[in-house]
Length: 412
Image 1 (tube, helix red, strand yellow):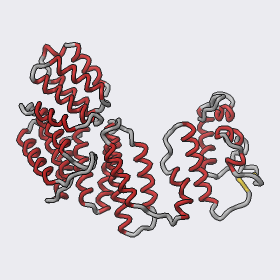
Image 2 (spheres, rainbow, N blue to C red; image 1 turned 120 degrees about the horizontal axis):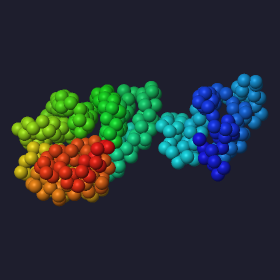
Image 3 (cartoon, rainbow, N blue to C red; image 1 turned 60 degrees about the vertical axis):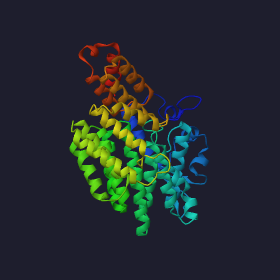
Image 4 (tube, rainbow, N blue to C red; image 1 turned 45 degrees about the vertical axis):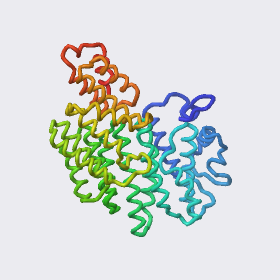
């Protein structure tokens, strides 16, 4: 519905009063037919034009056309009428989205610009797509969960359209590499918002695309990072172990960031199961691997740097109630910038857990509440808070701060 100064004119113009369910369904079918270019809205052309702030001639390009009794446009045909209709619908979608302040629908911008690309020979710029993936990776962690879901979806749709072209094998492999990277990033964003089902499906697509690309480093990363996300989502430990094992088998003796993700996931799962020995072994392997990883430029979710290593160590030490936990958390906090709200918020909760274990109950609970309010709520953050509540001494569970922490995490 398009809002104007006089209110929702479009619906009022079409029905005059509140429509019934049957009328709404009928209207929806007719609108879809108009948007596909199959029929001309003879009776409602003025309403559409008014809603979009254009004249009927500008909106429908029907000057001189004859409209028959069923509303099909008869007029001067052009050799590329179908392409024109696609571009017209894309332009209408763009105008509608921009007028309403909504996100641009996936694919509409590309269709609107396709005439320019066609005139240039439809060039494929894989370097630009690789830069796009890299840019997304650097921006993750400093924005609220779900920030990039719409943009990533639109880019994935655009890459899918490109994959439908006749391409040389090298270009197809390159686009599959891009598709795997974008899909993996989308899966992370979906998981961060708590939509674990959508994340699971998207990770599966990322793995298939990575395998199709033949890029070994990417094949390792989509499995290693998916193993971490599977753990944070609370999926069975076997899922985390299987994904981590696949990543490490594909990695072999190479030095890829995805292998570090896999070892971190293995350490998390072991610590959560109380298997301290396995968790410590995984941490030792992780530290040795990180010493040999190439230096990463900038922070990126696609890489693995010392802050992520120290974060993993902090979680394992906290989870196993290791006496080194406080030191590990302090070291990790010193490495993360304040704008990395998700990572810092989780570390603050780990620190609160350590304080509670050290019988600094009131201080720990207050820090946990502050940390929960200071960064976006996620299911993983809720599970960290739940760990704090479970470790409270019996008499402390009735404290006002404990009740508050329990209440604010209950709905996540």
